[in-house]
Length: 242
Image 1 (cartoon, helix red, strand yellow):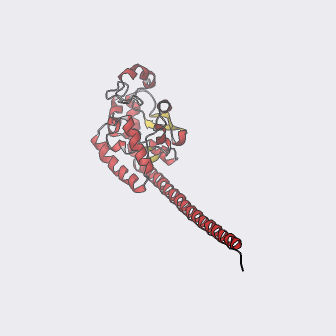
Image 2 (cartoon, helix red, strand yellow; image 1 turned 60 degrees about the horizontal axis):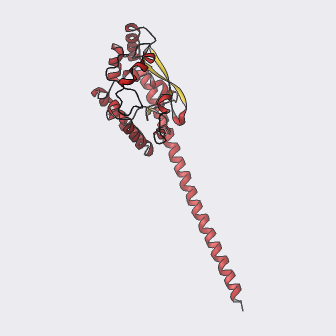
Image 3 (cartoon, helix red, strand yellow; image 1 turned 90 degrees about the vertical axis):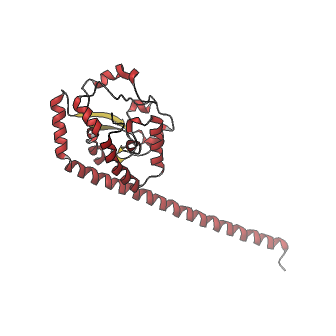
């Protein structure tokens, strides 16, 4: 007759086998869920990138006459280059060259230090003035209509930016970021975003960060499309554009 000790050992072994099987089954399910999540994220990124390439490419072709008209207006109304380029901070802190139509006089950066005491940004991290004396007459129209941002379609086309995403900051602003603020650098920056359609420069910096993080935590291709569609009336309304 089988001893009590042997039966106990067999029972413990059976229990151990069942536990190992359950653990393996659980690990397999977790592995499947992880692979499914990675596939979903990868597919979402691929579709977003496809939309960026197609959207920016078509935009540059369709708006070519507008580009030429703006270039002529900038060139013949104030001395200096047609385009303004600046180093901006992209995803994970990577620096890239950011393009706009020039809307300021060529000595704008040098004069910025003189105007810092008149900064109208509520949080002080970014610099904003409603009646910035460095802006040209044509520049005021371009900023009001956001037409100065059109060259960023090229940034989108080459992958530095996306059509939708947090606006890219300058390195000096990033130096003042808290750890929470830096979370807005977890994704590729964009031409338009949530706070761009909700008031632009009138939105305080800390609220801009909150809205950017809200966008990052719940990415969606449909949300990008909605933001793009709402950008048009936001531009036409001109709220917070300066």
